[in-house]
Amino acid sequence: MDSKILRKKILADTEQFIQNKFEGEGSGHDWWHIHRVKNLALHLAEIEGGDKFLVEMAALLHDLDDWKINGTEELNQTKLWLNQTGISEDQNRRILSIIGEVSFKGAGVETATSSIEAAVVQDADRLDAIGAVGIARTFAYGGNKGRLLYHPDEKPEMHNSFEAYKKTTAPTINHFYEKLLLLKDRMNTVTAKKMAEERHLFMEKYLDRFFEEWEGKI
Ligand code: ADP
Ligand code: NI
Image (tube, rainbow, N blue to C red; front, top):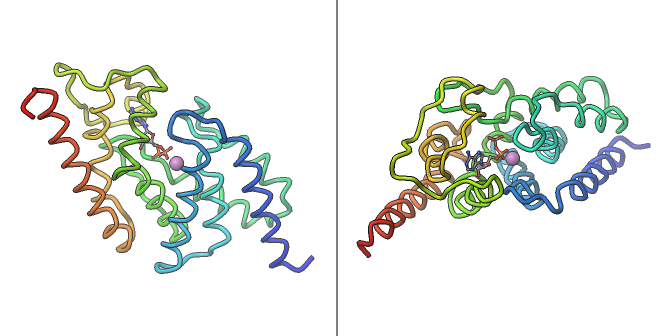
């Protein structure tokens, strides 16, 4: 098969597989999150560069083995899927490497990327974690895990290890301080940095308003 047609088929099959898998997900990691990340990542790659096939594959598969959903960091399901697609060893290895570099691991934990493809997929995933959509996803996640919206006595923590970050059961508002408000300064690409600014301002406004209403000031 012509390699361009083959790549298209692999992308279409992967998209169908992921769409089926994530359709009913209720923690803010549903199919539409994957869809937005794919589009954002391709948009960033268009401007910033990177191999679009690898970017699209990694974006589609980035949450398949997510520790928050599956409780493990092993990329087992992703490897199983990739191994039967017919892609080359090199592409297989590069897609796994991008996915391994995407996740946020705590305020004090470095998550550097080693390729332009990983940089744009990580930026896309982080853009979808902030702004109006980010706020909605965060409360969906908190509700899914049975967390409080907010507790005045529970202060945010700056986690210095992935282990500590994973264990949190803190109220959802804490997540804004522990992750979401930090993301604009951790974008890799200039294009994502610009997009993050507006989304960040919106979250700050939202939080001001949340606390004013909490205290019955407005
Ligand atoms: P990452 O791989 O960086 O964790 P994901 O796309 O898998 O990114 O999703 C992370 C999103 O899940 C967060 O932006 C937030 O919406 C939600 N989330 C994760 N942990 C929490 C938490 N402790 N409280 C509320 N929401 C959370
Ligand atoms: Ni994601």
